[in-house]
Length: 262
Image (tube, rainbow, N blue to C red; front, side, top):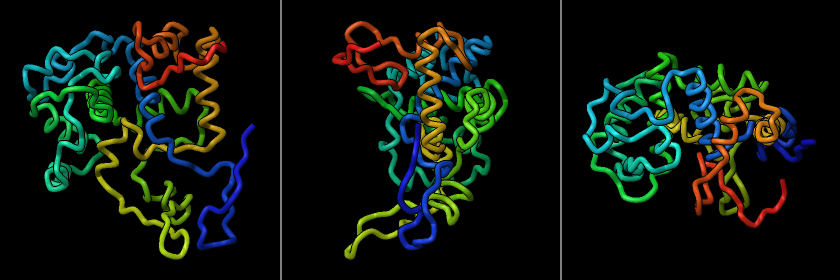
């Protein structure tokens, strides 16, 4: 069951939030990207052990990245530099000229893979590279791929990928409006439409859906682990949810070792 209460916009008391209003899913979107990659592996478009050097011959990258596998990317073990390692001026210069979301991501991935590897987990950057890799191999945009292989098979009718604040997206005139605390209570917050939302889409930025569709997504994974697979095979669901020994995260899912349920 799912229900919502409150206002879509606090400045307009005649706009109650509705069951099918979209809300941003944040980093849950990373697990959706991992599901897309798993589907393309099932389709034999590439393998979990395929490397960046093999799958992205169009990108001039440092030798350190050529042997990184897709599996390592989704486990945040690619050594890809953090997005925050770029200054705002650098980011603006990188994404300024390309127009399509795919070309914007290509420009950013090219910049990423020309930098020295970072230590530790790189979170968002790994998934940006994985998302662009998928669209480069299939020759379709990441947005199209997610709709075709994740949202539609799971019947997530409200799921959407678009810059925050764009038409019908969270933060738009018609969508749920974000609010921030001001001197006299909360006020609507207008976020300018940004090309960085295109860049970070595979990491979850700009992915939204209704509460009901988010529950549908969660149930799909629960059922997949129980052998009632939809969208992927049971083996793929198990791979997405089985961490390495002594680790508590896998493919952007967090495993709680204190939970004893099934």
